Image 1 (cartoon, rainbow, N blue to C red):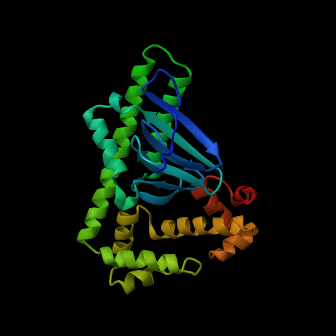
Image 2 (image 1 turned 135 degrees about the vertical axis):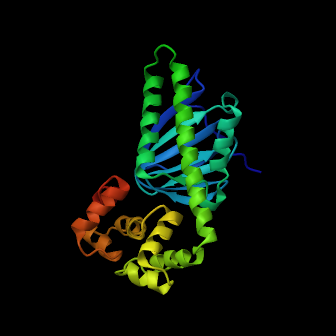
Image 3 (image 1 turned 90 degrees about the horizontal axis):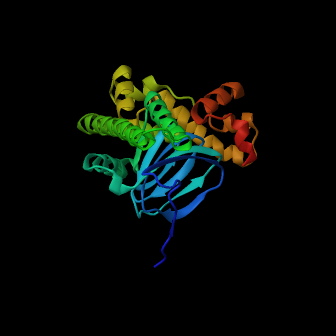
Length: 274
């Protein structure tokens, strides 16, 4: 049986380390002896791990336990914050929080952080990185404290995500699942969300509320996010920005470019180089 390569800890003589990966190069299947928590900030990539396979977009966060195989397939240039910590340095509660996230197979081990929470986590990781690069008195204690803040914020987001999904399971789950599938199959077409709500016998306001509880996004934001991901394929096939936007239903190239940059952090022309 093939044993995949073990990657080393990114810093010496510390229990917690952070690095920022900025590249368009994919990362092959590998393992490590430590916990890894990574936050997608810009770009998109395909992550495969024990909990499943998923496309990561900005604001998505995963936890990978020690000795677990995983890899990244970059679909463009990305920016990913990578936080590493040795398992023996964690207390029981911290280990439990990480395992909750890592074992979340329903969402392929992904916590989809709202914008404010994603920014909060990124800022704490930036502080941790500064302490790592410019250590001062009690720097190790500060890094441990910042790690705890990150874990609590992520775990609370995970619990909220699970709670929203649970409410959906007790309510109109099938209705929203049908709507998600319909959106996926008609991404390039104009969509009337009021008509979708009527199709599943819900008021438009209640439909929008239920949809956001399940997906974490409004119907419009969900459709826009999926359109952006699909348009990447056309950009990388050599289509112009206006052609790629039109392929997924946006005839206004300027509007397409604005939405694309809001979702990906970069304008669409940036991805024509990959």
